[in-house]
Length: 185
Length: 187
Image (cartoon, rainbow over all chains, first blue to last red; front, side):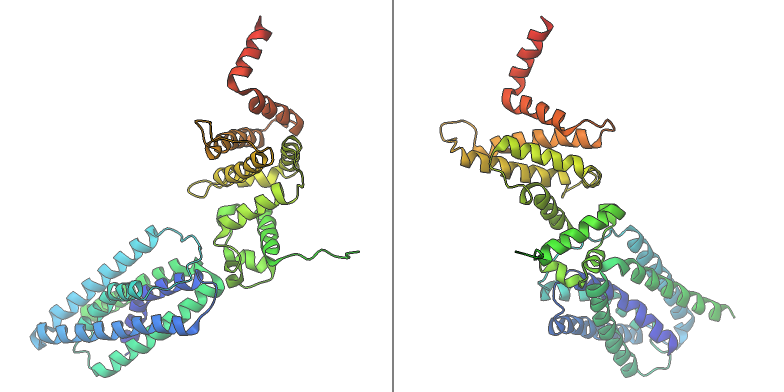
């Protein structure tokens, strides 16, 4: 369960980075608007995780447990590397007023950032946790972290964007290594 | 009698930016730092400025235009140069702001506006000219910016009155006039 939560936290970081930027470029903390946009991210993350769980169930079976583990480790290492490079290359945002939060852009962003959740859904297939708990955790974690990120952005600015990215990369890397060690032992 | 002068939030934020620029480069300044210096939260900054570049433009405008109440162009130009001399270190840091929102571009806009006001006061008509008043002011504003930048960034400490005379020569006589004068001196 701990590994599941850790992965969901890492997957939420993409949406956190986006909401942090939104919070940092607004002049008024409109809770209703921020909640709506965070809800979009949360709902899409649940749908993507569900899709991942379904895909995992379809393509993987008991005979493929070892293959499943290896694919999971590889996926997490790749995600960790990609996020690390993206964060490293990301330019510092220019803090500029952008009061309007476009629903269309948020939806598009949520689908892009939901790919992490899809892959996590696939990797969490057959770990013994009821899917409903995984989905509930995904929803709650994503919603709360997106809201928190927008508040952090509003009060403290967008300086912590890179910190979110590096933390996410680190979590994926750590989880991949934990899986690798448990596989070897 | 006014015991104190009311200061607007916009001016407070601009002052905060000025104070921060004494401590660090403009690129490193964040909206939060400006807010903290002014004693307000980040969001308040956005009620007055679009970004820190707009705040810098407002600050420069206040220093060069707001504080100088003078219609005569020559005297106004002299006062502007005096401000540049007294705030040399500040403007040195300003000229380091480059790129899309460069300080040179901001200064050019402000000076072009001053020139345009001068043309309006003098009731100069550009309708029969091949050049528009906008182009005229832009060219001369850019020329003044070039002279100012070289003066501020050079290590020699020329007095503002020397720069004033140089600018009067350039603006008054133009390139041909100056060349003719130099030729006469050579002869």
